[in-house]
Image 1 (tube, one colour):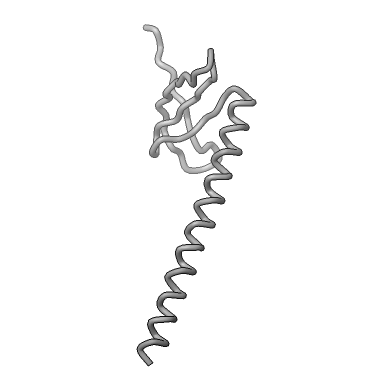
Image 2 (cartoon, rainbow, N blue to C red; image 1 turned 90 degrees about the horizontal axis):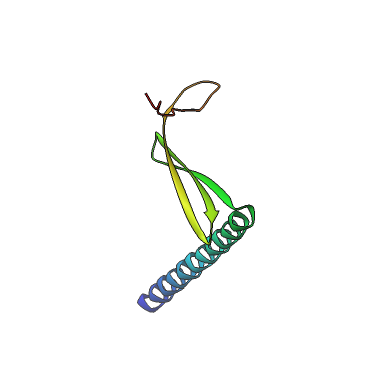
Amino acid sequence: MIGKRLNATVDQISMGIWSGLEFAALVGAAMVARASRDRRRGWRVGHRGRDRMYYEGFVDGLWQRLDIAGEMLVGRAHHVIYFVSPE
């Protein structure tokens, strides 16, 4: 009885490990595909938290970032971007 339970537990653990490895492989493949697409386009955008966004451009072999402060809204427009006035 204990041997059967132990075998079932080992099988469950090994299935969990394989599932985790498969998931990690899929995530890794998606990250590689996204990095390849971003590099081909030469730009990428993203969010950091609720009110921070960024734009990055690939210039001279390096990603250069422009951080953008914004505000999250409810309704039709999801984000508003504020540009600082030189005055």
